[in-house]
Length: 438
Ligand SMILES: Cc1cc2nc3c(=O)[nH]c(=O)nc-3n(C[C@H](O)[C@H](O)[C@H](O)COP(=O)(O)OP(=O)(O)OC[C@H]3O[C@@H](n4cnc5c(N)ncnc54)[C@H](O)[C@@H]3O)c2cc1C
Image (tube, rainbow, N blue to C red; front, side, top):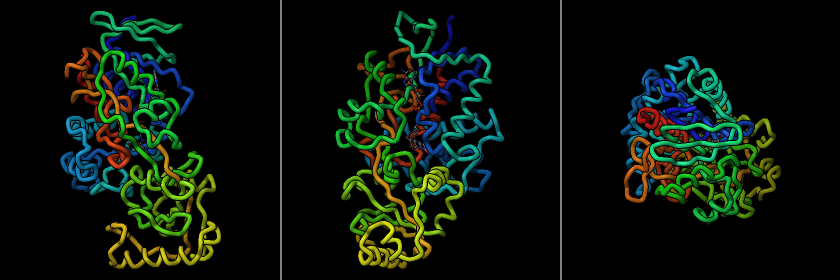
């Protein structure tokens, strides 16, 4: 069998590219050896930004790819992968329009999704807004699409002159082009220890399917890499990693204290940058404190609802009761919340946080969290269309990459990850790849 394009990986990037390339009439084969496992798309919050999408405009929000790029540059100064960020920013409205053309009823703008670092509301998803539901939508769409074969195998790929041969025990096929879409390397301890030494021992709350195997294929072919120390951290992860609170609580007014009852960071720096700060506290944990009024705004927040269902959120009628419940010194917690109240009323925050959205009042809510590594951001260097670049700065020829195995939108540690960068790159660069394939 001969196809126009073989895609390695059926996650966010691979499935998006398959659908969009298939819609152009290309013959596509997708290799996915771990269909039974939840990949990062399925684990994710399923929230993607698309500044200037038709859905966002219809919601009456003034935004544009340029404004989003400015947000990204302000959030991650000196760390932005400019070439890819610009390409992705301008591709996202088109990528979202493609999804709408595929199934207008499924996709929606999320008017209640506040995200640290974003100057306006610009997140989209399906209903319910979750990675699991988005993943299920892509699976259904892939199965229904004509001209796309999904092969549940791991393939060996060989480059022959002008073509690629993909072999597994079950099948062999020839492809004119290959798209590397196997995710990052967060599930490979050795690679994490090598490229992000500070997180070598940290909890990984992403999917083990992100084993770096597709990244390594690109490296064997001589690809360059970019930003290998960049990662999405998660400072709102419940200990153990099965659930998390989501990114919005600090923006809505929540605070975080350590076991001593003291605040230690400007909590709204973003969920990713928070991770190392939380890990630096005693026991590597912090208590995220908010109230019932904030919780009432989290009804559509899937990650938070999962944490509640798992019993990770406590309720207390007073600060003293909360301190007792959490095992924290009551006087210290009271003083800390008093200080937060004063900040909400205009006092300068010694930790530099600019906005406290509200004064917390009883009944209080709280949850223990730790810092985790969610997914890696560094990967194969590509041009604006996702063509993989080799050592001589030239495209390798017929090889494309998108998603976690390709270089992300920003690098250097956890602090450069603006919420939504992951799916933004998977769909935005994925759109560029799908249009560049011949
Ligand atoms: C906890 C968590 C929350 C997140 N929340 C968000 C969010 O709300 N918004 C956002 O923008 N981003 C979020 N992300 C990031 C987002 O999930 C990723 O950026 C995105 O899924 C990357 O897409 P991908 O296709 O590269 O990887 P994946 O979606 O993980 O898919 C990769 C696929 O490749 C397959 N594969 C691996 N090796 C091979 C191989 N050798 N051959 C063939 N196939 C292979 C895997 O089995 C997998 O199915 C989150 C991530 C995590 C972990």
